[in-house]
Length: 307
Ligand SMILES: [Zn+2]
Image 1 (cartoon, helix red, strand yellow):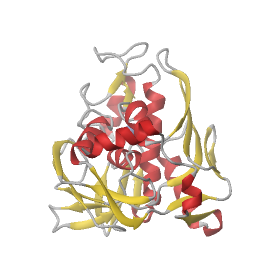
Image 2 (tube, protein in one colour; image 1 turned 30 degrees about the horizontal axis):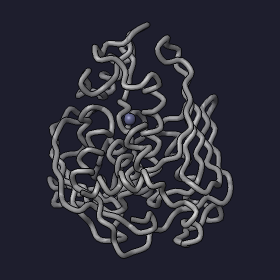
Image 3 (cartoon, rainbow, N blue to C red; image 1 turned 45 degrees about the vertical axis):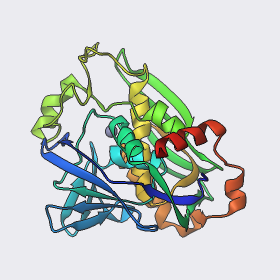
Image 4 (cartoon, rainbow, N blue to C red; image 1 turned 30 degrees about the vertical axis):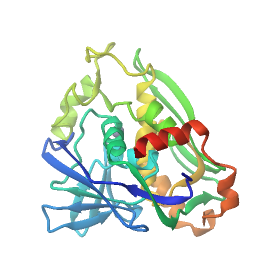
């Protein structure tokens, strides 16, 4: 199986849960979609109104990324979009009967498990990659995010929180279905106990609990089970970033470097990049892809995902 063809899922899968911010119960069905359809949300509670997962529909971005088209909202898109991008799914319809994606365990792991159940089906259409030609950067005080020309999809991320269990963390990773599933997908969303009352006043995290988030007290952790990785927070930032970069609509050939960035910085970079046509080109070229063949191990994992 090559990475240079578009992929959808082999069969539909369903799940349900509550939204992290709205606490609204929600049912979701992922269905195969034709080539060039892209990733599209379909509000089954609103006459199947469709909202493509595109930078064209970016709405609110603070604690989560929301899309809006003609006044219809779809919220907290990043964890599912991250899993789809991470596993190399180009075309899928996400049927949803509410306005916010279920948070499940706060990570992308449940989505990865579901997508592996669904299987991955190669389509006939070639996949276009967005190849970055020139560096683009967004800076906001101590926050910075930049995207550089690169032959693969690589992410470097660093965070700095004044907390004894977090502090400064950084990682650099080449994203493949295998590395995403193992190193990034299990990392959960996180928050600080001190900030929760204020967030609830803002109408946020109403569905939040220790079942779907890592919560830090002033000097420790509330979750009995502990962290999944010592640098789980930094890994979750990478997860969120991949989910927001999915709004570009094409898999990337670029190196993204994020320092203390969040959804607002991620989406600012996406908009700055896509709107300047001189910064990138689309490529389906075999030569470009040929040197990027996945390793034998990655192929084995992909095969397993399709079985
Ligand atoms: Zn997140």
